[in-house]
Image (tube, rainbow, N blue to C red; front, side, top):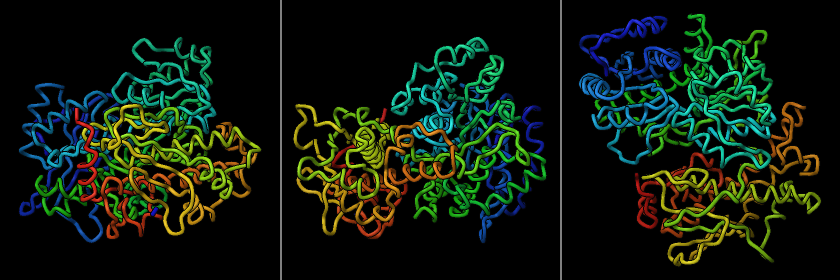
Length: 627
């Protein structure tokens, strides 16, 4: 087989949202479903939240095609101070609102979600700091603030490699939980050609002197993780120091809240912003027209937060239409059940409450004719998003998680070893002429397979567990340590061929037939001309982006072929491990990991275990305990 609070809004918040058209009042005989938008009423976070609200309000006014659904009002309220004031506000909101949509400053998410869950108020957090993943179906807490921390971090490091051309980026963060988590993840994810020094906190005292020291300390680029206030501080400090280092900002910072970037004054700085499946390429083009028209009428610029606001409210409206009313009993299951037709029915939200299928676009701060001062770069002019360059998936970084099932993942050896011949057949091997490149590619391939199987068993891509969510199984390129008993260890062997199958399982071994996979799926997509010394720049991370259109395309072809081949091997490995755990074949659900009919053409990110197979895995493997 492969909502609402009776407290009067502050003047500051009321003034800030004045540019957003008021939501029409519902008819008296058709009471509107109230949704409260909770956000700070002042400061940089309030500015980003207002941009989100602009897009959300546009969506609130347009009926879904063919189904108006319940009337809806979207009402902004000020975020109360932490502690007793938040607790009191949630108590009031529970009586008056169907849903809270909240933009929370960095550091407020954990407390707010805990209080909302305790008060049993449905909550959808839309700011970058994620809520706690949970499989508890009665816990009505969702997150749609962007991409998981690890995905954001590896994409940032990949963009630092290309187009920034950085081999020693300075990692800056604002000391927030998400900023620190991204800095920690960078220790794992940096490219084999990149060297990292300890991350730097942008605090009150960080200014021009510290910015000037970055170049003296050998850094050749800056990556910033965190909120808008410190992002603006960092950009101003770098400008004061007359720094020539390229800068990459991350989620939520293409905004008027970071005016130096927004106004095109950041001397060619870059920023990366997440979007969901529905807004990639031309998929969401028709949905965007109302937002574009509203932005034009308001004489504003379309910004990422606006696009995310529009998308989130379209999801909410679809769930309300499916539920028929705004009661939590109906609405929460409907929100969980939302699917994407274009992604073979992949749910909008993962079972643990986080929005799925994100990709990053790249924005540039550079005034250009007929373009805003900060603008999104076309996908054809930036490196392939979502498929990191060869050299990010180093097998030495992966290890077994004690007390879990141990899975030893490796290529077959001796007379059964075929991986080099398989790669040669698809143009990714030089028959030993470029031995070091081949070794790097083999190491990266195995690391990618391990990373993908981690994700399919609901672990993070670096192998760390998501407490309360991940299956209690981990993957390693090394043999199991002494003392791991037979019933707690399996093998995945990659190599060889089979007349009719991409993999087989027996005893404690899952076999992945890489020759079958390349023969039936990838030989028609082989790299032409095949890999040679000329590809060293693409394999070693040294390609200077935009050197030529042909080389840009070549870079993308290498990435996509490596990503696709390892995706197929990872899916096949997970399928065969499913058999070892006791799962049978499934031929009804198109996204099922155990579906032999559709598995060969299944996109890795769309794949899931069907509910009955999840129960089998949970019984056989267990879950990593929640904290």
